[in-house]
Amino acid sequence: MSGAFGKPSAWQRIKPVFAGFDGPLLFAVLVLGALGLVTMYSAGFDHGTRFVDHGRNMMLAAGILFIVAQIPPQRLMAFAVPLYALGVALLVATAVMGITKKGATRWLNVGLVIQPSEILKIAMPLMLAWWFQRREGQIRALDFVVALVLLALPVGLIVKQPDLGTAILVLSAGLYVIFFAGLSWRLIIPVVVLAAAAITAVAVSEERICQPDLKWPLMRDYQKNRICTLLDPTTDPLGKGFHIIQGMIAIGSGGVNGKGFMKGTQTHLEFIPERTTDFIFAAFSEEFGLIGCGSLLLGFTFLIFRGLMIAADSPTVFTRLLAGAITLSFFTYAFVNMGMVSGILPVVGVPLPFISYGGTAMVTLGLGLGILMSIAKSRRLVQS
Image (cartoon, rainbow, N blue to C red; front, side):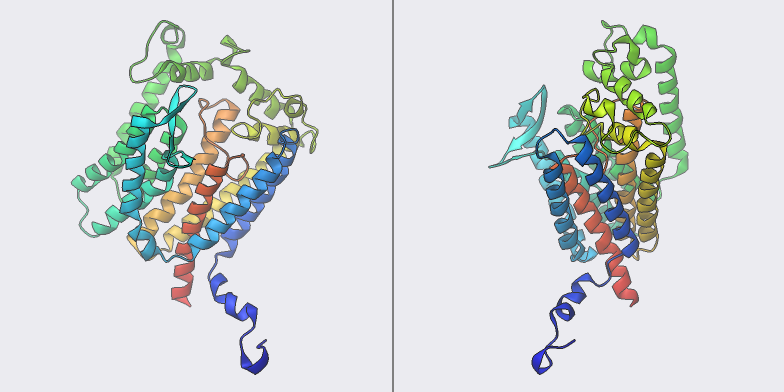
C-alpha cells in the first residue's frame, strides 16, 4: 500500500531486491541449515559457544549469499581473472612466508590470518568458466590443456602445504568445469580405469606396501598412514585408526531411529573426535539414526538437483559451467565427508556443508550459493 502523497511503502521499495530468488533452492538451504543448528546444539553442547558461533557463521553466510545474489552473472565474470590471480599470488606468498601449524603451512598473515587456499574453491571454477566462455564455439584440445594447467598450478601449491582436503575440493571444482565444457569420454574413461586399478593394487598388496619403513612416492608418511589405516583401522585402534573406528561405532549404534536428540553416548562421552567439525556426521547418525541420515541425504540430493536444474537452464556457457561446478562441489563436500566418517574414504579435512562448525567454510558456502542464486535470479528476471 502506498503511503502519504502516493509514496511507495517500505515493502514496495525493497521488493525488487528479493524478486527472482529461487524458492526451491532457498528452501533446501533453510532445511539443511536448520538440521545443522540442531546437530550443533547437541554435538557442541559442552564446547562453550560453538552453537552460538555456528548460528553467527550462518547469518554471515546468509548475508554474503544475499549480497552476491544481487550481482549479475556478467559482473561476476569480471572478477574471474583478478580473483584467480590473487588466490595464486597468496598461495605463493604462503609457501614463502606462511604460518606453519602442526607441520602444515596453510595460513598467511596480511594484517589478519587468512587461509588463501579457500579463495580457490570459488576462484577456480570462476576462472575456468571464464576461459571456456571466451573459447565458445571454437573449443579445441589445446584449450583443455590450458585449462588443466590453470587447474594444476593452485592445486600443486595447495598439496605442497600440505592440505589434501582443500586440494581435493579445488581439483574437483575445476574438473567439473572441464567435464561440462565437453571433455571427451575417451579421455575420462582411461583415467578412471587407471585409478580403479591403482586402488585395487593398494588393497590387494596392503600388508606389503603398508610396512612402516616403506616410502610411497609423491606422498608424505601421514598421507600413506591415512590410506593404510582406511584399509585396516584395527592395526592401530587407539592411534591412527581411532577416528574411523569410533565414527563407524557411532553410526552403527544409531540404528534405524537413532538414540534421540542429546542422547548420543559416543558423542557426549567424547569418544567421537572432532565431533563438531569433520566427524559431526557420526554424531548426527548416532542421535537420528537411519531415518535422520536418509532425511539429510534427501536434503542434499534436492539441493544438488535444484542446482543442476539452474545450470541446465542457464543461457550462457559461463553461467552453465559455473552453476554446474558449484553445485557438484556441494556433492563433493558431502560425499567425501560422509565417506571418510563411514570408513570408505581416507580421513581428510573436509567439512559437511551447513552441518560442520567452521566460519571459513560457511563463508565459502555462502559465496557459492550466492552465485547460484544470482544465476537463477538473472534467468528468472529475463523470462519475466
